Length: 319
Length: 319
Image (tube, rainbow over all chains, first blue to last red; front, side, top):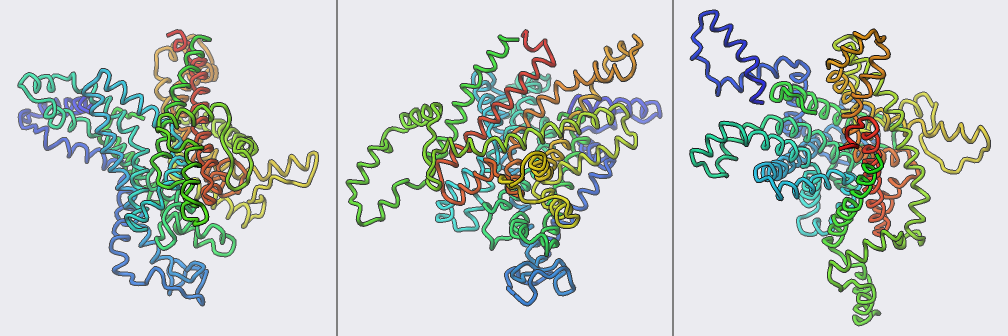
């Protein structure tokens, strides 16, 4: 990150100097963010993704307060109906209103994505930071563990863990919280490896940089070197990876629910609605199309935001 | 080359041991007791249950249990399915060829789509073709396989009525007709997987070619008077494939997740659908074995990637 900014900055600085502007008026700390925002803004699709995602988030947060149709009102007279004024997105096989269900389920889908990402980023940063900063045996061991986790098959393992622990967690934490905690923990716990690798690589190069050496020379304790000097400078790629992780976690939760092994039917996450809809495709396609499109649009927007953030924060374009 | 191969083969042993350790730890940590039914049955005295536990070695220290489990896994003694009353290895061997066939053909089809598109995109960056291809790839990897699968069924099976959406292992036809029916029912599952794979591979391929095409040796090749075709195919693509192989190998777990879902959507009788039905039937030995097989397959595909790697870049195998 630090390496690329001077390239454009010195160019502009030179231009400023030529134009007679005072060079010392340049304030790096406040304009770093502005610079990133300027680059992000240039990525039009990322802005579009941000807008779509914002609409989604507002809809699922505020929607249930505005659109006050219960999610579990069974009405057999109106079952499997397509979109109409009474039911804007149609109904399912029990005559339950799909819009209400999707607004409610969207909260869970998005919450799972965000929380799993937080776990993945925190765990990955911790592992990567310890490995990159200490080096030696610790680094070696941690990286072997990372490699091992990378070669684990995600979804089958997720299914295995859900199968083995579902009942116990349900008993202790209740059906909703138990399933939520488990799914978030397992998805997050299986996705920290790329972050760990990124952070380690950043730490390996940053800890040899002059400014860290200066901090060390001034007597900064290792923990201060990490938290004040190295970590803030390696945060760019982590944000990008974290954004992509939200999308991956949403897909993982939806896959799990789509296989019928995620949330129970009374918590209609988008994947769960798809699971219920998939056997009625021939006479009620709307039932599957709306939640599927919601997942697709969310994932697409997040991926575009991640793409824009990569351009803005991580100009080296690490794949 | 043979030394390199041998080293790669030897690495497999600790990796498999590590994976099995993770799986065993999960199983050992899981609540529940295989003799739980006997505990609640008043006709079975507790001494009998204790004897059974001792006989099956459930009271032994965990390290001994792990070693015993691992050696019997290696010997091919995978236990007995609770539900279908046959040996687990026979059950899996029945299903495995279908899965490998679907994954393998999807992977090959994906490469056949991704390599040409990626190369053409990179040789004409920012052209109309490139923009369409990049956008398509972006949409493609944001579309989860479960939604593409449903869309395919909706369009090709229900709307157009061209292809069957249920995979049948017992087709009562012979000769060419048999082949034709098999190919027809495999088109959709393979296409769903292949398109998903192709989307991310196109992106990898495009950026790898963009990196290579500006190197000096490519200019030399052109200056020598080689045609553009020869330059691209023999000089650029081969070197661009090196990073792509690594990235594709890292993607292998995702392929298995996709295969699991497509098998479930199209009811392909592979090990993925066996895993789901075993989970629904609480058939622990089968679930453990399939998760292990999936892990072993990931390791196996990584080995193939390593071999390809050595072939594409001879410098690696001499190191």
